[in-house]
Amino acid sequence: ANVLDDLDVMIIDTGAGIGEHIQLFLRACDDVIVVTVPDPAAITDAYATIKVTARLRDEINVIMNQVRSSKEAEGLFEKIHKVAAANIGGSLKLSYLGQISSDPKISTSVKKRALFSRDFPTATPTNELELIVKRIAKKLERNVLVDPKESGLGGLFKRLMEHF
Image (cartoon, rainbow, N blue to C red; front, side, top):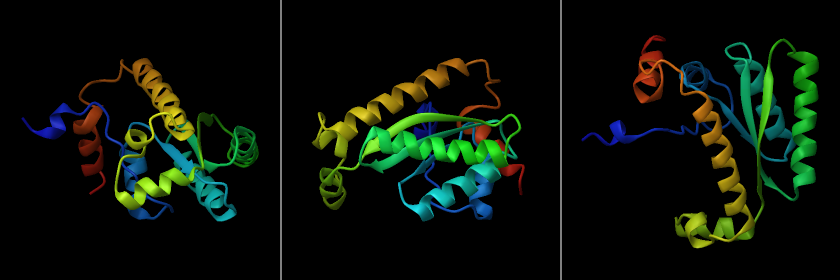
């Protein structure tokens, strides 16, 4: 069996920026999750991505990464939300999926090319990731009425091909 046939969810990390290739994926995917860090340049990139994506869909999810506290994460999300509401408006719904705290153990795992959550199963970022995954799973469960021909990997590739 083809490994792709067994996937329920495929996450594509497009990196920062909103170039032509990134926009292609944003148009084709089922859901968009913007991940940003508490850095002014990253926040600006995240907002630009939200602004471009808002032309294509009504709901965009946000995760705050490498934060020092939930207060910092929620404060940054609220700033992005306020700017988006004032300048984009319309029917855009920004959904906060959660945060991933900054932790020096993460860079240790990255250097070892190891899975952080397996190396440090009780660490705060692992627990935060699990919570985010649960929220994403709940959203997926609510979207089960999507036409099977239009969802999943097949739907993604079909939508990608429409742009060529």
